[in-house]
Image (cartoon, rainbow, N blue to C red; front, side, top):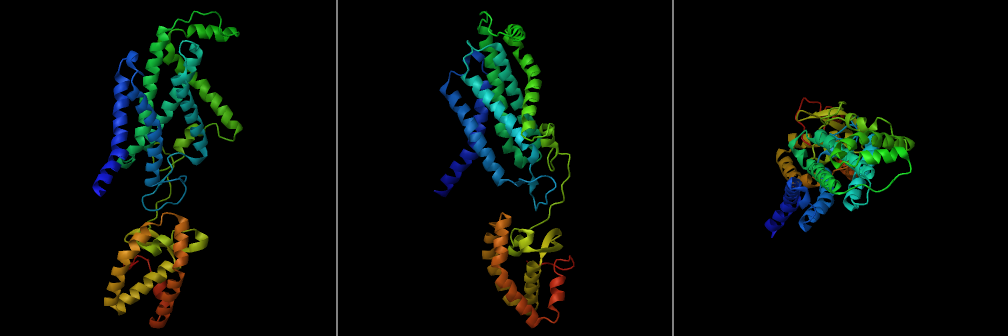
Length: 370
């Protein structure tokens, strides 16, 4: 039963995205007159959007991406956010515009719509494809990030397919009706746009005023005019990043004390940086006390130490692996306070210089135990 469930999960999270990518690529290569006539094509398109967004958010939650800007201190293999948080609003705004224009193209009546409206919606698709391309370039730094490429890649495939179909339908329409716009400039522009083969080029030209109009709107809501560029460059750890964040601090996720030292500063009260197995770690007094206590037990009662260590390795590791946030680290720190006081009592009772032993923990001159 377990193996069947595992196979279903692998198919759902790995097989489905690859199948949908293959289908979207296949439909893109078909002749325009055969597009949007198959129910399977429509289903695959809907699933691409629904599962694409869901899987991308799910995978980002499982990855080492941490929603913090380049100057934030991170731990272990964590990576800063690939999009600058102050520019995220700009990226989301243009992504929504692109999605809305895509929906418009799917729902529009090509025979009644003017070429000016159609070209404007293609320009919206260009903006979306540009964002997808930038995301793909930004995120592809390691193989582990490749799943985050699938949805933007599929969006590009669907957009290109839509534009091909739009040109095909546009060439079949005859725009010879009387004046559509009262404004002479718009009407002259509308007449020039009646050649559907030129729509991709005109849409490219329209992209610039579309971006400018979007930036002006965003300025009214406090966004910076250069946010669409800085959203990618004001980052660290990624391909387009221009910033270099602080070196990650090592936090051993197997050890409760080490993990707890990564909580909020006002709670766990970090003292300094220490060294554990060649990595920098955050050290607080609780961590030093616990390691000093274990060191004392190992010196005086080696057999007892082996029993304690075996018990802790069996039951402590799973608990420590579940600590994924500062709040959880704070809770562990507080729960371990009684143990810390017990460790101090034993140290002061059996060690001649307990504070000296505590002070030298994680100084890099001896092997830490916890």
